Length: 195
Length: 175
Image (tube, rainbow over all chains, first blue to last red; front, side, top):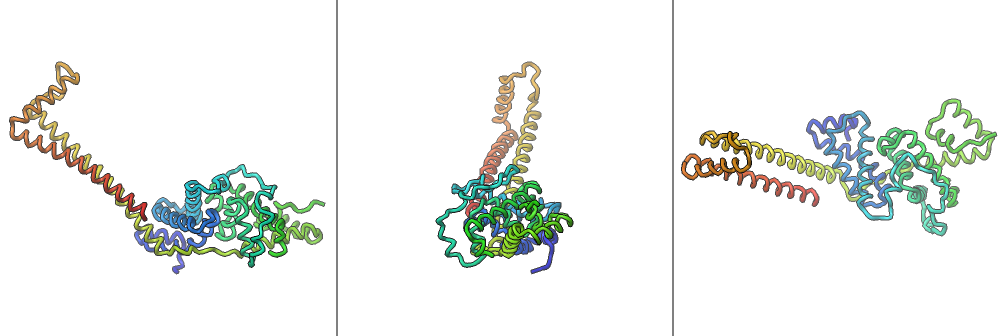
């Protein structure tokens, strides 16, 4: 893998070396896929959305001005592609569950998020599985911000640019997501298992 | 003595506190067991989340994504080119046709703006007169034929462009 910056790769692609776009795919595919899987909750849809995101990025690379980081620009495409995918399919996941706005209210009633008789937790073996299960229980907007922050390693500013939220609201969502995840872990008596 | 709020703990984790506030948090948890327990829970959750790893797509290779991206970009560029060339050709053909018609009008001494009446009927009369003359003069017959060929070419061009665009869209959807 060449040790080139995103900007250097983009310049090379724009000069006509289309093949260099593969370096960007290599660099971002797993991270973007993790986010898409978290948002769409389905491998097939996530793979389709991932492919569409790279195609859109490749086609519109000329419009990338380099004012923001490529990662923010690309994650904006990824996020919008996921939104389109959700609005195109008729599932139980409503767009309202994931749309980021500045009027988000904290979730105090946890009873809607989990089933007390859920026995699936008994079959989970690793910490990663526990966390994944918990992340699947919280609203997508929370789990996707956590994914962007911890797995995709975007900072608050980049998450704000990708989702279209303000920086202060992004912080609020991140904090609420963390609080909710911790409360759920405690509620499920997983706190000891996890720690 | 107030306990630490969730917001302060979260800001601590995000390294979003001033030096003094950070010191205050660290001091506070040294003697407040309630906050220490809460703080440690957050820190552990934070650490666990940090160790989460990425998931790779199982059915998508870098080459597959790249090839499809290139193919679709080329299809889009072809579509743009076809539309551009078609528009340019049609503009050229229309201008040529206008030139031929104007030449015919001037050659047959038909006034462009009639002096007597400027209503629709008069204009039809002028065109009728023009076409009547075409039947008798060889040069005008050639012009008339030329006009027919031009019109047919424009129709053919529009039809072919539409077909090509449809075909490219079909390929795009199939891919």
